[in-house]
Amino acid sequence: MNQLHTPKASRNQEAERLSFMASVSPPPVGGLLRGVVSASPGAPCTFTTVPALKKTVLSVAAAALLPVLTAAPALAAPGPDKEDKQPKPPAVMSTVGGAKLGRPGTQVNLAPGVPVLPKEVTGRSWIVADAESGAVLASHNAHWRLPPASTLKMLFADTVLPRLPKTRTHVVAPGELAKVGAGSSLVGVKEKQTYTVHDLWLGVFLRSGNDAVHVLSSMNGGIGKTVQDMNARAAELQALDTHVVSPDGYDAAGQLSSAYDLTLIARSGMQNKDFREYCSTPRAQFPGEVKPGNKKRSTFEIQNTNRLLTGDYGIPAYQGIAGVKNGNTTHAGATFTGVAERGGKVLLVTVMNPSAKEGHAVYKEAARLLDWGFSAAGKVKPVGELVPPRSAETGSGTGGSGGTGQTGPGGGDQATGDGDGRATIAATGGGGAGTALAVAGGVLVLLAGGWFVVNRRWPLPDLVRRRRRPGSGGE
Image (cartoon, rainbow, N blue to C red):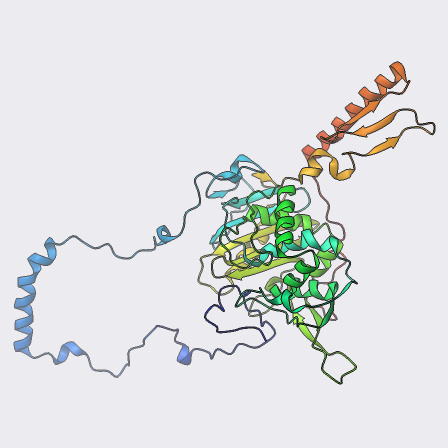
């Protein structure tokens, strides 16, 4: 059973992780909200019962105190400017993706025909970007390094998912669950029970199960190795605001990311078909515990805690939504990265730690920003870009680094890829022809590289077009 109401239970639980259960909180009585006291209409007025003598005494006392009170400094009435108590972003932040993204505050190029940004967005940091071209349409403190909560599981999946075949089975050893943090969100993994890698990834994406993360980390070589791998992956993606301490997003000193980085990470993860499938799954069956004497293993339903995907607690499912990941911890507050497609456009949005008091603010603010993004796409001039991975910039991700290829059946000229991805020709007797080929080949590679730098398009194949809208049944 998931831990609830323990002293640390609020520390690292996902928001409403028992999402398929009805609320246990009773509705307000008589339409009153907590902390609001209503005066009884039949109560007598106090001032009409004060005797005349007492009135005189009070008047004299008030007159005597008046000079003292007026001499005291005036106290400012509490006004709406309570924002000063909120933490402030650093004056200088990373400029990866563009200089404007390193500036504090909201960055957007408003012009005639561009819709105004929604006012009801209170996230400390947020970003709206085109998932395919990488253009950043608008941002707010994009590089502010903040605790990411379980949105960090996107980096965990982007790092570890390709390494473990989904059909591989694993028996959970007792030590693998020993270091799951108190109050963690859990999917219900049990010791000495067998699970497939597929089962465990469903637990990570749908229920944000820290228990599933720890088991998969063990299969990857342990928590320490997985953290090291994730930090290396973040560096490869140029997610330089990100530092991993715990792979599950559990609050830990020094564990940080940013709206910009989380969006980069989500964009990378969505290139993987299995990643796309898991993060867009509304609900699934998860293996239960094998009981002695039972031949058939029972299952139970788990539901995705992404409210914009499933629609729950008064949050409607967002049209065209296809993932990605939500999170909620004491230090991070609510965090969310989502991807949606509409009218041929695919947008990514990340919101970190809204200060609004409205329920489920992180989803509502993400939906507002997505609505704005779809309205503004094609009209607004970008304020920056989502940079490609280092390997894509150098060409090594496409086999340019260290690769060799024969240009003719007899061995002829041999093309080799050097460290920065540029092709060179080692002539083996081609003379002037070899030199000409070398120059031509170098020019073609440089032109191709220039095209990539200018366009930086990164398609998301089969993202949502083959997927039915949430709530259509049979999922």
